[in-house]
Image 1 (cartoon, rainbow, N blue to C red):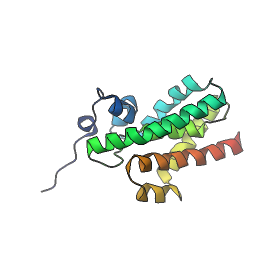
Image 2 (cartoon, one colour):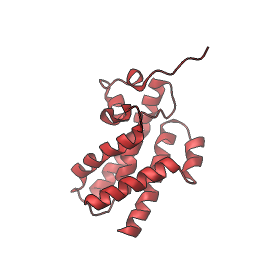
Image 3 (tube, helix red, strand yellow):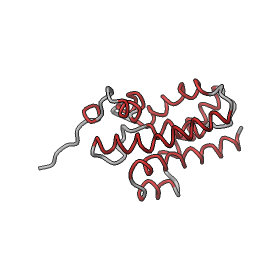
Image 4 (cartoon, rainbow, N blue to C red):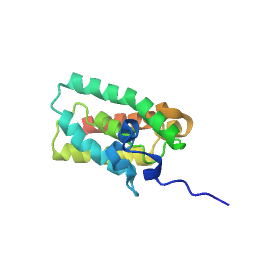
Length: 159
């Protein structure tokens, strides 16, 4: 007899601040493509921060990434599932990374969104290796940080 895993909305409670952040303010609870919905939430969040001096934006992104290790680890442990699809804080941070030092307009936001999602979904080397081998909150965050860095490199080449 096989048991179906609980749906994400039963595993994560939006009343819990850690879960709220981990599931991207609820965007990760989308039944299809939660990572894409999580990245979509990152866009207005990034726009709120885009006017900060670059050094502050980099600092904020580093803080978000470091906090994400704990946030993602705690949420995954609470759910009992490593890197549950509903956990999208890592996508939010990855998108912030891919936009660092880029002039913000509709074109750069769109290209950044597409590039980050591409690297996050396709997981070329070394992202796939990290995704498979590195566990815990650090592993959940690291593959998206690298996807964000790869997208950032291409963004700087394009723009």
